[in-house]
Amino acid sequence: MTEDLLARLVAGIDAALPEAASLRRAIHADPHLGGDEADTRDAVTAATPWIDWLPVAETGAFGRLGPAGPAVGLRAELDALPITEATGVEWASQRRGIMHACGHDVHIAGLWALLAAIQDADAPLPVGLVPILQPREECNPPGASDVVASGMLEDEDVAAMVGVHVQPAVERGVVSTGAGPVNAAFDTFQITVTGRGGHGAYPHLAVDPITTLATIIAALPEAEARVVNPIHPSVVSVGTIRGGTADNVISETATCTGTMRTFHEADRSALQGAMTRLAEGLSLARGASASVTFHRGGPALVNSEPLVERTDAALTALGIPVAPEPFRSCGSDDFSEYGDSVPSLMSFIGTGPV
Image (tube, rainbow, N blue to C red; front, side, top):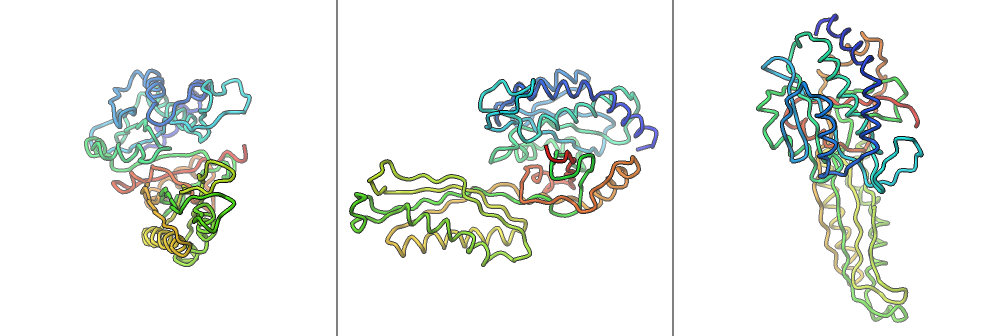
């Protein structure tokens, strides 16, 4: 890309920001959960009538700008989260229990600003650009896997994928890239303990699945520490616990669900095995039984080193500071699915604490 074209695009983005902010607020006020994002998709496509959008992954869409041949894919997520908003802002969610709390509305607006700047620049692009309005980033299975499975990356000759995410842990105005893993692989799990129900006054005649499950949950960190290399990040967190129907009744079953995050495939496999053995062994020792199931999510998100080097150089040339220590976390993003097909780059845009 020539310096002149880059300068024109930056100026065009700056000029488009007020309208981009209005689009962001409209999307924020009308959020939709994964699988129900058609209205959000349609709002974006209506705001970009110069692009011929095509459907992908049920409620998503993609387009193309620039010449034929190799292209760069640009991903923005459409879905919101099942959270009740309490910000009090004028553009707060009008859908109770649903909120754009992860910044997807900002990502969409940023992509729109770039597309508007390209349109206004009225200059040939050096490579093709393929904007992707991706659904179901917050879901498992994720929307990105459906985009990849559709074959559109091959059809559009996408040679690299680029995504961004706002990040309050990064200083405002700073961009964090960083080669290598930046987000973890994610899996969900369910552990169900089956005992023998009974009266709470006679625990010796029952097999209590709730206390057995509590012991299993308390032991999960120890299992993790003994099978995962200590210098490899990993997390096991329990999010729900269900069991029992009355104060004085020992239930027949108890269940917990949670999330598991790892950066290395060997750790992923080892940790699943350790959790299964732990649950089954502790249950057996108490006269109960356990079933453990895992729902495999996406892989770790790994940034391409060549893309990082070129992006950092371009940001520096524009006077945009690059984080000296890249942001990495056990958070996850289905953008990682693209990295299994083409080189990819996720950049974290610093907002500072919000």
